[in-house]
Image (cartoon, rainbow, N blue to C red):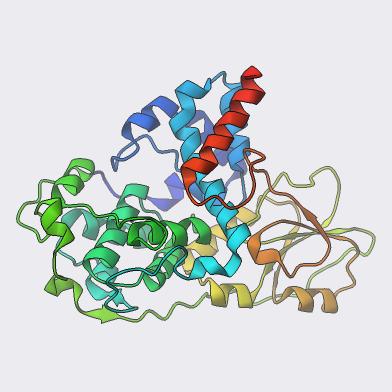
Length: 376
């Protein structure tokens, strides 16, 4: 197995260093190796999730480098998954917090297997990944699927609390991507459950483990009773350690830009001066709690925004407490109650709305790309 990641080196928060990471993107190597724990993944997900950079910016960077669709299609397709999950959140709203397409089958409980949370399942690769996760705030995407499959489809958990557990610790926490991916694995947002046996885990994680409860055929795995190690469950008190708010210094002659934990774009409206306010709403973090590590990451990223001030409180309270002129903010499903001028986010393509499958969405995106690029 590869060595554990060190957060500060893998996920820097200085603007110049972050943008330099674009130069390391290798679309063909990514396509060939992305499912392996040491694959050529970009480590850009925390910056995309936090709105520091957009999928569109990355896409256009590759176009500027001369990449054709054939050479970068798999990479762009994976970027498109992020926009796809977000489009579902926009279309369905809070419905993504419940079983989206059909009820999850064979649910034994709505808690978390203690062994998964502690990294003591006996599956070597998964246990190590969980322990590294607490240190780094990052999990490889394939490993996220393994953990979700073990938790929901082998352990019998409903997906909701385990998905919240993972989101709580992720630097790249994106509730749509996280919740809907867990549902995809658990079968409530897909036509069948995702399972992985020990042979599959060994292949992509470079382990050689034998004799585990997952070291069986897929036919046997589909019928497996919940192993004893996964039967003990725990409830998880997830609360966000929000900072104490300080008074804002507002220039009454300037308009204001409202940032959130999902919009930390340092280039947004950088053509002139504004009151720039990072709004941390307790009601948002009560609904979607995050831990200290992702909160620290958000606060550090926000320091790339000139003259940013932090306000901990509700949007309405902010408006009532300060005499703010015109307010600007970027669209997001969590901003529905904001008032002011809403600006659209940078989507890769103009495709909008709900699509029941990713590939029906991607088909339209790919067609748009070809039309723009080749006039076809």
